[in-house]
Length: 145
Image: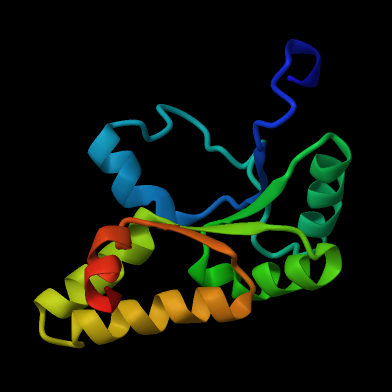
């Protein structure tokens, strides 16, 4: 990109994208579930936290400006480790399954959606995320705005 005059365009890498059950609601809605096999060949094993350090270092060496952890909620420890290790802008992607859990629990009366959303997003921020990408973004903006 630099060679094409786009040096000022920031690059956000999927440096830590885990193979996760929390993608299922999106895959179902978009009808993009794997027709065979799985995506574990190019998504990280959720039991291996050290891989996130290695993959993120490689992405930064290749010019990434922002690193990302996806999904966010089950990987707060990874968000924290990456932020402490690299001290670089970090995005966390709060994915469809994380959104759906709160939606379903609120619908059944198990918790208050507003309170749970703010608590969840705050925990992601507290772990070290500078940017949070979430299906709850507009809802949260209205709550805090």
